[in-house]
Length: 285
Length: 259
Image (tube, rainbow over all chains, first blue to last red; front, top):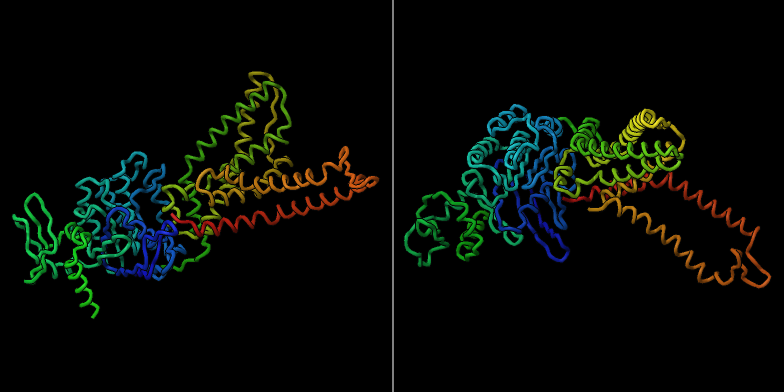
């Protein structure tokens, strides 16, 4: 569905953000795109949406080259950036303007989403807060039935009850034909939603796995004393003690805390990386 | 899903046009009100002084052209604001997006400015008559000077449309600079050359290169004829080539726009 091959991109000619980036995303998944600030998450999303052009390599989305921005391609992809545009119009009027552009748009679903997210479509955008405006766009994106939905920091600005509703709507919107890509720093907001997880670091994809793959390989324990064992892959000190990642030797599958996983990947622990890479090799064979 | 024409579909164009128009409707209304206010004050002033100049030679054409070029320069402002992602990912072709803008800044703008000038001049006429007992003519949209200035605007707007897509900020001023720089060079270079090479040989505008030999009338007539021919060629090129050339450049630049 999305295939990026040997992609290179940089905002300045001499410094490349991505160099020979390769990734393939398949339908039926809600991908979580994680990375530190400046890792290139938004840039990657913009390349997939056709807003930025690769300098080398190819990006193929739904069989199209996004940079050509063909109407047929654009009508199948919906991108909600972190900072978005809203006109000085009533929500209902604005949405009526947009609906004809998206052939799969489900009006009934949109009304239901707006209702659940407690938005009055008769209000003007200028009367709404940032979080409320975001709810409108999220409702529209989910009701658009686009094959690719791209959300950049979707939970920023949402209150706690709305985050819960959003998770519910998101989970009900994924099917075998579409992809949702979410770039976020608020991983705890989407803990049980995003899977697989992609981690970008220094312009490279350092991690791209499903959580069940990781759960088969990694075990998580909580202990009170600082771990000194050589078998420890990564640990973090928290209020309740030390959360420790070790190799899963007993076959039980623990729930993976994505924030912990992210920190473990970014820490560049050699053992952890080898374990992940070993898994990749096994898959390849 | 029904097949979608890649280049131009009437339904998609209509939707793009509505989207362009309605999402900017308040800006258009506010700008029109502000312009109407300024013009009304000016027309009342003209009426009070009872020195109604030949508005059709200077004032009306200047209003139509300058206002239009400012509007044109702002027409692609969304490309360089937080709205760029929305505009570039709107599912319509680049041709439809360009055509939509073109219709707004040409047909719709000219229609709007003519209605505005008629409305303001009627109001000014009423105020001038009832308050000061003076006459003020109602704006005539089919006056030859108005029609020729509108034709001129329709050509020049394509240059400013290119500037609107090409420059990120100060599009209007930068486009003026873009146009004026080569013209300045075209004037200054021959002037300096003349000053350096021929100034000492001229007397009262007549070149005397050797004693007893002067480039003077009737030779100057040939020069004038040549200049007239050059001007005609440039005029022909201006009216026939400028618009398609800059529209093509605008389209190509729009295709390369990133957010």
